[in-house]
Length: 281
Image (cartoon, rainbow, N blue to C red; front, side, top):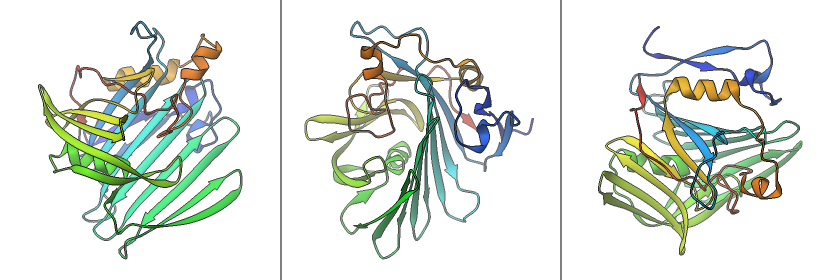
């Protein structure tokens, strides 16, 4: 197979009905061409109990793609795709950084509902978000002249050795607002750690070894993510089943959306050791 192509197994094999073109039964594979220099990383999500032991069945998966955009000269594109098996929920977050503007697109896909938000950061340092939920459209404007960043782009700056620190207003697509966070990038025993805090509370932590993302968590909580190989990722999507533990306690730990500030959010990842490097094209 062409080394610059990556085979993405469509989510049609999941026992959930997502409202997007990949989920109809006629689609089984999609060939996605990545520009040279693109990194693709895969993660397994696990619910972890009070004892620290992970469940035998994964709670979901994450695919993290970062590299040149390929359609706009000088642009950089970062995308994550998160699947929550028990809730049959899929979250897509894409950021494109261009020389003169930046764009974020957030999509939350559920069996009977969904939400889409597009945020555009213009050259005149204005931010405009357009949010669509249940057929309703809402437009919000932001002043971007203060120190500000998009969430994934902030991680990519840290991955590539950029200098970070101090207070940064990070755009949060779930709440549709700029949130002030304290940012620290420190050396660690096996690489570097990017830490984001809202006061004394952890908002996010990312561990790197060179330019590898070794692990991450979004807010302290019951979800952990550890890197896996592409084949294991595809198998988990194909074999996904709703969680057998449907107790109120389990449902309270299950995240509802990306970047949610609530305790059950997707921010509650905790990274583990990478067993194999990311795929490159």
